Image (cartoon, rainbow, N blue to C red; front, side):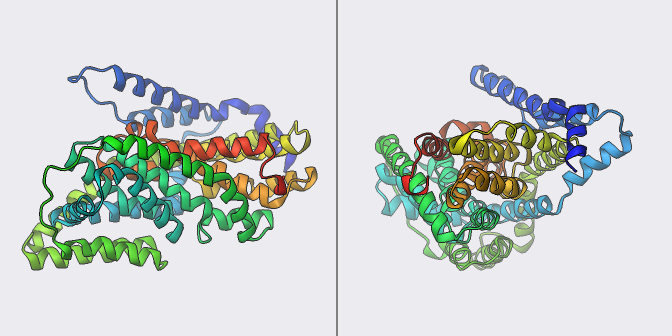
Length: 437
């Protein structure tokens, strides 16, 4: 197996990873253009960036029949875990559109504006995202539940929608790094052979400072949040779909079941209140599904391109290169961090990234005397930091789609993923926490 990997890497090497560089180049170019463009200039879609990178990935897979290249791409684009995410996209779009059509978003926004002072809206939303993600253990569920409310509040008071959405998307990763039922926590502890409570203690010492600092930043940024001119009367019945979604999610129900229940309740309340007819509701559901079309296309092209990178030996290349020169505990921990970060870039899924490198990380940890609780924490924290900052991650795409903005607009305001990445890096360099280092 090692010989095969060396052959693949020698033959493909850095070329296998080059589609990611092409993608990043397009993203940077689009970002610069969007900042400098005139108001009348056309918008550049991330779909184009992924299409170009995908075409390039297929082209560079030389000495392989074209049919096999396309089959490899299709295998990644139709992977079972990706299909699950596409179902979540469809249901999230349907639920968001139905909730908006029957007034649930407006009612929830009015409720928040009525009971929360305007200067506490941003830190309040961040704390809500942290609490819900910690309770349900999934960043995706947190984004689905809170982004429509955050974007609705931003629109109501004339505040920055990307900033409000970033508050939720960033806070959603709090639970990914700390929740006992988060899939990243489960996989990290299982691959490193340590208890969840021990890994929780290490992670809490690393990410808690980041959460406190980011909360303070949002409090400062939100200090001058404009107050609403007048809050309309609150229709408490129409808040029920969001309350039900939160309660069932916290109870541990599958996110697809949660969204389906919320969708049905929206339909029942909307039909009884006369907000729409049965056919009108179906039309709204259709609009909600279509609103997720671009995200679905991007997700499928990303899955196909990343599968080609994996098939061509890109991930093996990263792993082999990063494990060649390790010197001491600090070097071992930095190698584990770099390993899971780069693989996360190639898979756009933090759980898959941890699964991919978990066994190798454990061997590195054992060889260089790294505490398994620290290695598990490094895997979880760095994978979540990277996942929170890539514009083609499911959480970013979902948040952007629900708020009808570009992922690139959200990226500059994602303080919490930046924060946990910096804190985790400092924990390695400064050998913190001492007890586990």
